[in-house]
Amino acid sequence: MRGPLAPAGVPIARSRAASFDEIATAVVARLDRRLGDALTNVQFLVRDVPDLDGWDRDWVPLGSGTPAEGGVPPRVVLYRRPIETRADGTLALRRLVFEVLVEQVADALGVDPADVDPRYHGEED
Image (cartoon, rainbow, N blue to C red; front, top):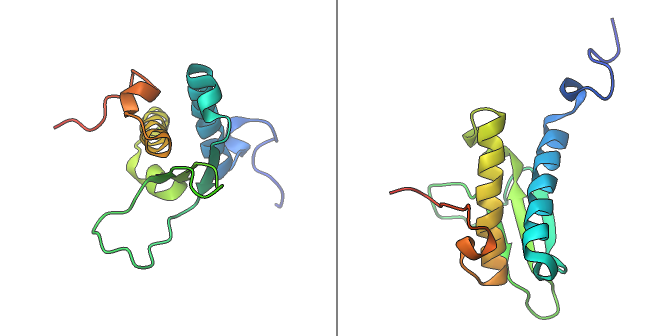
């Protein structure tokens, strides 16, 4: 038997990457409603994995945020596979995407993560 196992349009038919993009887009839209014009020029990207050439740490980044510099707009990148690996289920994935996006937007804009979204709690000690 050849062909799709599930009909198009049902959640199970979407790829993991498409589901991740949908979650990330929803979080960015929520932050955009909160921050308004502050995110106008920010570029948001999703990459499967980070480039670890020259990386000398024993952990893998979940995202990166770089401020505007030399005419290049601020940029926020999420690394899909490392985030998915750390999330146990859809709710955990949504929460982790939210946390990473808030942290990286804060880095890109040079503000505190709590200023990006007051629901951000960061790592617990």
